[in-house]
Length: 210
Length: 252
Image (cartoon, rainbow over the protein chains, first blue to last red):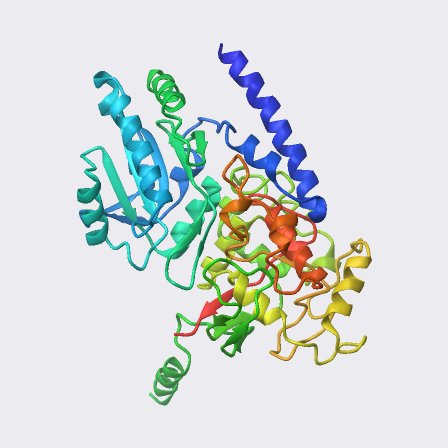
């Protein structure tokens, strides 16, 4: 089973690499579609902290506590980048994450955390994150993070989340939910706004056993 | 005592946190963006900012790697830079070929460029800042003043075996060098072009393809189209032979 996973990993990595060459050297070939799909299941090596947890710098949570991303280590984490003034897509992402939480068997609930990171460094200050968590009924397993624009951009690059601030203060952004293993390795990316709760539950179950 | 006073005075003149050497102040202005996005009215205001006069060179980047060993070629995590990272160098902290010392450093990832600028107390320019600064007309170009002709002639030629040194192409009206004609450059938000939700593929990712071009402000601007398409094809850990960077800084 393990060999199988490694073999797939190698195949996917090779696919990702060959896409890379094509897209990086021939700008007009258009559309990094192949990359996006390959990247969504790209396994991250598990020797020590995965890249996400290597990012340095303090974030502030909804209770005004400072924390570094590597403090999320130890649990399986379900992660999304959002902004709380978002009218449509972000509430859907949060609902999808809540559906995952609700569907987990009771025995697994304490092994999983939920992390929302805001693009909106200006408006999503800790107090606003706190209000949002209360409105959405987000419980003790949830962490909402505020960071400076540089930190947010760096994290988005690792997760391959795209976002752009608009003149009215809102954001265009891609929609993905990420499942991170206990060391911060991104093991699955659920892209788009269609709930994929079953898939997520299976992945989480597997990662808890590891 | 007098020298102490001089030092204090110097301290007032140039704050130690803001080292603008090698930079120039770009005045505020407006950018007519190549791609029109929902929520934009066709003009983007760009605040005044500092920009490096030329791209970061191999020599300058070497100083950064020496001071930050985690960015050595042999030590960097693949998640932060792919396997071609700094491949033009002879070794971890050795450039080798003297001819490229003052050429722009290329084969560096977005993460590496971002880390360099942070180390300098600077940041990468945003795409809007870069495009605005790069849109200024040449003041000393040999081939005349037409920017798009300079760019298209550059696109027309294969990459030279030895990348020319910084400052070797042209200076523009803002006083910055080589914005076109030498290398492509990373920007802070290179992957953020989102033409609109209707263009998103099954992966939830937007593409700058045919549909994206419908929203362009100037369909004739082939050179700009190339830049946006190229940026869209990148990911932050990629390294490319003709892709370097320069840093920017806020006006305090």
